[in-house]
Structures are given as structure tokens and as C-alpha cells.
Image (cartoon, rainbow, N blue to C red; front, side, top):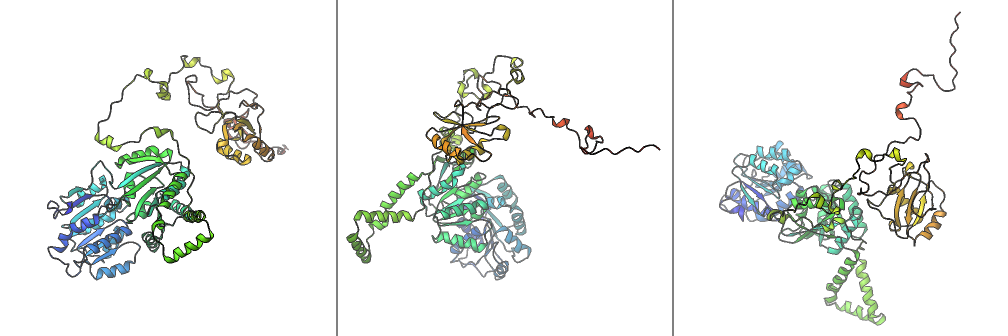
Length: 636
């Protein structure tokens, strides 16, 4: 072990180690020479000889348990001082004496300020998960604690990552520190398999359900970014039949302990938690981590994922990535120096296949039954068919499982691009990209700025007022390059752009009135006075009957008189207007439509309106309309 070599003997240590790699045992052995000083057992407990600082209550309690096991035969007395516990009881324990004190930064500082914790005899100070403590805002507390302790103490810093802030802290409070890295700079946690799932944002809950069903872990941890998201996810999973607990900052210490104990003894299999609440959790059976919300950065990703793959066991970390966050996820994985396998969420059919395989391997089918069980089986066979009994067994087996969710694969356009491989980036030379002149590039490879413009000079191009046409296209719901549905039937809505018609609210209104799904709707074209949309031919007859019965209300639907998809309504100024669907700028439309000018339909512009009082520029006005003017006094 690197921390107990001759090179490390008596020196300050700055150790970069993976979570779950046995850091507690490492610094416990490293400081043993300072605590025992060659003896086999500790002397009477007095002022503490070692101070262990951890970021969370759970981690501090875990460190206390492991050090109690390690120093059991040495007779060490170990006291914990953590937030959420009775400080009075902790002060009484400190007054009785301790060899080692383990605590969180805030509570330790409180005891130091109250002089309940005396550190004059301190020989070693350990910062466990130092990067976590800085992220949680404990910098001032750490500085206060370290400046209070003796200058000749030995300082050991352990951290999963070594950002600049940690290096600066080490330079200020350590002397001639030996830097130890337990992993290479170009690889992540060797015992954790990373996966990235492409999933639409509104299907993340379904993906979590199917992942839990498909992988069937002994225990799993689902991360959300907010307390509200934790409450919502925990409620959804519980409703679907999972044994689930939640961990967030709003829980009391007793509630947190109860939830963690439920996970340890198997009463709960799924824990939904925020980043802060899950720090320091150590569950031996935890084999799956799901990031329902993406981590904020690569460091958080490593700490989240480090809850699994501990003590030599394998684990899986799954990121659920909406299409809009794909690039951010790739960059995060690259910064964390890990490679994830990309794919889709397990489908309901995938889960049914796995259930079938698990049922065939069920231990109940191969274990010998008791005499009572066999007697009951003989009695059942007398009155029921074997096939019927087997079907009942399968039905009973499936009844205890949460139902899988139907999820369609997400065929994102970016799937064809292979994800980044951090090894190729850091280990091999980058291939030179063949440079092509702009005119030699294929048209589809050019950006919009690269495409050739019209040969005519700008001043020769017709202006909208010269053609008498409005260069304004109808709005479309289905992306930049819409296409009309083949054999679709056109219908008309009596609202258009002048009434702020928008496909975002028109589409659900159409589906509601006609009892359709989004798949039954084709192109949607919003014009000035009306909106035209397509309905699949097989759904059109029923749709026509339903909308004809619902004539009341502001939005009315009727079959379009012109099945070409073009508007026949005249705008108020009685001028024909060019109508086209929104699409990317092409070669035959190089300039695109200019911004639409305000149209007040013949009304005065805002600058011409009179000020309050009747006359322009705020001069005294003529009073209210219809009021008789006050008669002028007559000269006598």
C-alpha cells in the first residue's frame, strides 16, 4: 500500500483515489505510526490524537465504524461529532476523552469555538473527500480547523479529484506533501460501466422504470437535481410498485437513518436522492446508479457514480440524456475520462424476454419441496390440468412485478455520429482533416452561409412593396422541413395568425375535439385569417362527424373547401399574400423573407396618439367629450 511505504513514512500526503477504493483503511493505517508510536495498544483516552473531517453525517459515521473495526484490538476510543445529533451528548463524550474524533466541518468548528474539543495533543489531521467539502462550501470551516491545530501535525488529504482549489489548499496547509494517485490520468473507475440512454425529456420516468425492471439490481440509486424532483420521482416509482425511499435535505437525521436502514436490510430496493443527500452513502449491495437528471459537471458525475463499484464489486452508471443535452453529456464524459456505451432504453418487449429467462431459472423450480408442498401439489393435480397450474404460477410470478412501460426508440439524427472516445483523444494523434475548397464541397455539406447567393445585385431584387406581396410564411408545427401527409384530408380552423394561432396549442385542441393522436395529424399551416391542417385519410370520416357535432365555442373546425392546402380567405386589406411553408433557406431563395413590418390596419401609430387631456404634446385639452364648455364671464 502506497501510504505505508518508506517514502510516505511521517510525511504529509495528498492522495487522489477512487470512491470505494478503501481510503478509510488507507489513512487509518497511515496514521497508526503517529498514534501508537511503536506500542501495541493505546493508552488512556484524553485529548484526541487524530482528527478526521468528512463532508457528511453518513460518511463520518461510516468512517467511525471502519476505524472502530481497524483499531479494535488497539483499544482506541473513537467519538463522532456530526450535525443533526445532540451537541450536548457529544460534548459529554469529548469530556470523557477520545483517541480519534470523526466529524463534519461545521460541528467540529462549533466544538472548537466552545472549547469542548481540545486539539493541543493532535498528531494527525485527515481530510476525507476534500473536494466534496470545498464544493459544499466548507472552505472557511476547514481553514479555521486547520489553523487551530498544532503546526507540527501531520496532514493527510484524500480526494476523488484534485481540482485547483484542492492543490491550493494543500500547498497552504501541508509541508513537503507526497502526492499519490491510485489511478491513471486517462481512465475512470475501472469497476464502473458507464451507459448513456437516448430518451426524450417527457419519457425519463418511463426509462427509469424500465431500467430498474430490466436490470433488477439488489439496490439502486436514482439521482435528481432538486427536492421537488426527488419527491415526484419517489411517488411515481412507489405508485408503480417499487419499494422506494427518498433522501433529500429536508429530512431529519432520524428519517435519513430509517431510510438507509430500509435499504441495508432489503425492505427498500430503490433510493431517490439529491447529490448532497447521497454523499457518503455506502451500500454494499448497490449495483446501479441512474442519473435521471444529468450531473452539473464531471466531478459530480464521478461522485454520483462512485456510490457503486465499491470494494472490488462491479457497478453500472446510466445517464438519461435528452436530445438537447447530448453534447453536454459527451463533453462531461470526456472531461471525466470515461467512455459510455450509447443506446436506447429497454423496451417492454426486452423486459418480457428477461422475465421469461428469469422465470425459467427461478430457484423455486429446482429446489426440492417440503412434504406439505408436495401433498398440496398432488391435490391440485387431481382437480386441475398441469398446463393450467403452470399458467397460474406464471400469472402469480408476474403479478408481483411492476408493469414495464412502452417506450419507442428515439431515432435522433445525431446517432450516426459516433460518441467521443477519450482514449483516442488523449492517447493518439489527431487525424488531419482533408481541406476542400468551398466550391468543391458537396451542397449538402455546406452551411447556410456557404451557399451561393443570387447573381443579381441586392438593389435589383424586388421589394415586398414593389410586388404587392407579403413575404410572410405560415407557421408549421413539425420542424424546419415539413412535408404534407400523403392522401391526407385537409380541414380548416377559423383562427389564424391575427388571433395568435400557434400549433403548440392548436395540435392538442384538434386531437381533443376529434379524438385523434398526434400521429393522425399531418401538416399544419397557419395563415393570417385561418389555419389548415391534414388528417389521415382513415381517420377523416370519424373526425368529420365528431367536429360537426361540436360547433359551439371559439374554435370551429370544418372540412376545407380547397384540398390543395392553400388558404382561400382574404385578409382585411384585400391583397393577395404569398403563402409558403417554413423551410431552411435554399438556393432559389437566397435572401429569405425580411422581417415583417408592423401592420396597424390603417390605425394611427403609437407616436401619433394624443397625450391625456385631448391635445397633442400634452397641452391643455378640451375636457370630456359631450360636456358643455364653461361660459366665459361677461364684461360689465
